Image 1 (spheres, rainbow, N blue to C red):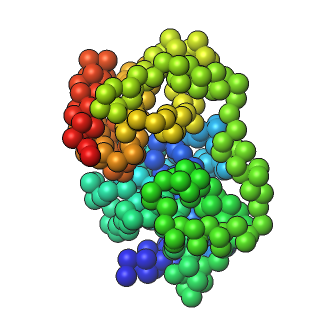
Image 2 (cartoon, helix red, strand yellow):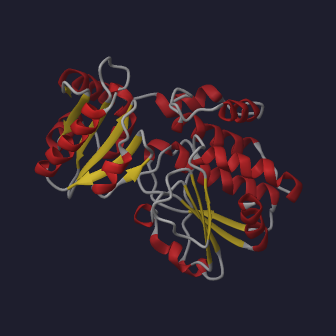
Image 3 (cartoon, rainbow, N blue to C red):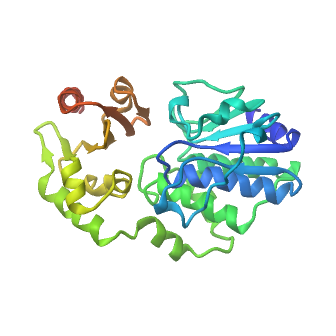
Length: 314
């Protein structure tokens, strides 16, 4: 069984370095640092590190370690919640002796020496908790901090248990995690409290989104609009769900202009969108994906493809 093989590698290596994807979310942080907490709590003598770019909005969850290249020699690298190598934060993962991939996205890029992929899981954090449950007989131990981080990732990737990926297993794991001691109110505040700047940009989005007859909704956040609201592209992640409750919308798309490209965030209530995202340097889940384009003309082409998918969806 693949989980036992992953646990075997964790037990075999003294130095373990855990990566996750760029532009991290709660599931990326939670699975990465939650796994570190479990390993350190279970095997105190091991050297375990978490690396990657930091998102100030997620500082309340954890901080990354600063390590040298030398530590990768003879080390095990585990990459969490990252569908393809292009999205791995910190490319030093290539320096390790062995690479393990743990993910719940479609396995379109089968990188790594050992792969544990489960697309039925609500989140990678759900997989990390399953790793702990399976590994208890092998000496794995949970603690309050690991529970806090894993719970945060499950909450984040299920949209507070609203998304279709939420299963009875998800609820069961969440119920077990909240039996540990951590401040859930503080955690929810960290995940969902927004600044005045973000609130005003939310208002702009609700007043300016476009909705086609097919059920496709789009909003373009240009550099000028972001600057006017004093919001960075990274901060827009908290706004993607804003359009999800509006009647008549099947698919909604955020175009976020950055310095060298236009970031695309896609969400769906039914039509499959990750296949189209894959054509535009992206990917993800069937109903939640990301991509990127370089021009607004290319954005228009992407919109036309999505409009066709919405028209064909019953």
